[in-house]
Length: 148
Length: 148
Image (cartoon, rainbow over all chains, first blue to last red; front, side, top):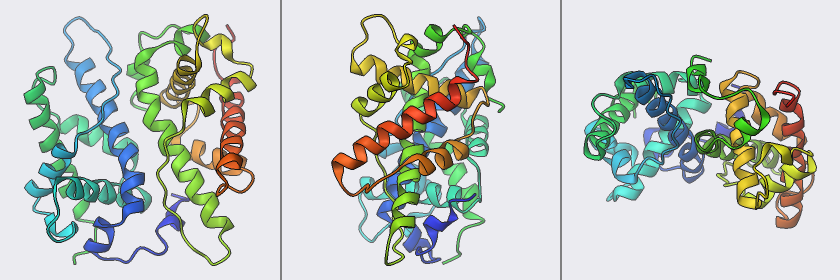
């Protein structure tokens, strides 16, 4: 990744990564892109009539903050963080993992697609599926993140 | 690219690619991500005090539609397309080029960063720089797109 220079001033701590506003901004389109393609792949694979789906989806703050809590990674967020702050932390973590070469966007997409279970056409099922998939993704990259 | 399956039903014509709503949805975060990182790199490189910039930027419809017109690629858009339609066409073209393995996201970022000229801190200069950079990117991928 020739873009590691963008991490030059980020301290190697969970809190520094999870509360970096710039990383959260970068992570926003990464998260939305990865989820859109993963969902498109899953819907296309599950289609009974061979239909291809190309969908663009914004992942809600609620999905991302729930994933952070379920992954027991709230400590990456600032103290007394609300849903919005916690979602920003997820975006920052994902951006960091990407820029740091812990995971490529292609790998993120494949990982999310494999972890998206259930009927994504049902709104409620989709939300739960997305929460679990992002929780698993967070736990997956966590192994390569600073331990404190 | 293991995601080529998502292009299975897209006809190999400029108009089919440029007017595909699903491709436009996928292209939206690709465009925003690529531009955000390219701009962050350029600002960081140009910084006199070694500051690192991490910025997240949505690219406006006006920038994208101007780039399409300057690249003389309006024919990818629908007849009587407005700015919004033309911006969608740019997003669709970029998504197609990515899914089709014509260009990776990393290559897109490097290409845009190299083509972003001028002082990006000046809003007007930034808009012009972004239009030119996207025009050049479109012309670059056009060589590998269907000729009709």
